[in-house]
Length: 242
Image (cartoon, rainbow, N blue to C red; front, side):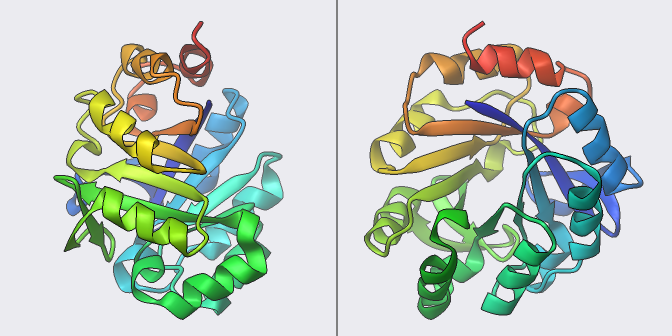
């Protein structure tokens, strides 16, 4: 499994929210590039970037920051937030993203998802963001009422093979992971998925590694890293069972 440090960009800064609440933000770096550089210098092998302005407003707003990061640093980047048109997906890839993450658009625009899969299949990930097991959209601000497992099954029938699964209730809380939930999602996903939500200690990462789910490809960590709960190296070693 890969440890993905999270860089959430809002108003030009690297921030973390609590349970997706835009009013509950902590600014950790004034420059997203400097946040990214710190993680790469600490040993990060991949970066997870979310354009929170884009997620809220429906169109990318921080691709210039993504371009600066990919120009300056030698690690691949996956990017989500506001990618709701084929043009915005192309722009994200042109800005240097290795993979793009579709959220709202994947659920609400059948044609767009089909077009993205046809054009960039291996570079497309769909984000499943759940509150109480029900999928949320529009920057986590609106609930669809649909069970996460049901949505994943439907998307797989349409050709999706890679997912990010986020437990919004645990996001930014540092309160631990729900291993039973991760196991349920792993039993549904037929491709690969990355988990996000609640990681606060190395024991949380060890618990995920101990599940031995072959389709769990990585874990996104934000606040725990920013607050020094553990280092990139320690986290990666924990995911490898060390």
